[in-house]
Length: 277
Image 1 (tube, rainbow, N blue to C red):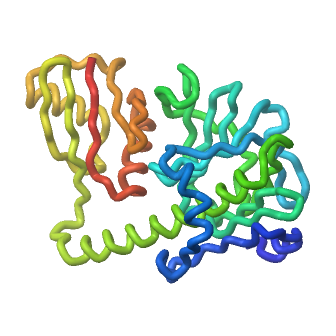
Image 2 (image 1 turned 120 degrees about the vertical axis):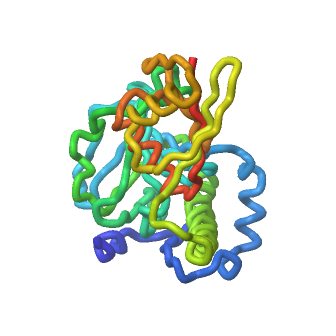
């Protein structure tokens, strides 16, 4: 990990937020930070407009992609690198982060786990609308083997927003750790089978069905099973599902279905609503 390189940046009153799964959320709460965050915490995301993104060694990446933003999504516990022009988004689960620091120069420095997970989306109808899985890497390999990134905010981003962003990441990360620990305890007590199951609510124009499938079932087999069991016609080009942030996302192929499974396992919510039109 690049801990020494990251620590070479001077920190201001923002300080370091280093993640430790053994620290409970209650023991790290700050009444002052809770008060300062209360006015925005009901929103679904917090966005930082960026001037540029650098590797810790100073090399700039994504230099040819205009209007980049760093977005913290509260509902899905995601850190997202988004282009407001190409409408592409790189989604990184918060559990892939190790440390975040706001430097005296107002830089956001984030350390990630080695080979951190990420998934790529596009918003064909504009940001915050329907998003679809991207079959290619918009980073063009720039994030391969990366363990630290330095985000330079745009000049108009004020210090309070940076403080809220850093504290928001910390708060969501710790809350997620506690929730996952409770789920793991529950699963260890009640699990009777090694096979993960996914519950699917199938929504048609005038009908609704619920079925359970093993999570490793292929997408084409799920469509075939729905067709055979419920005697309904399915247009494979008009299938979508709602994710945890209520985005409607099209499902076209196995790669899209892998993204569904990835989200289910990450969130430990083994239920999705699929829509057929």
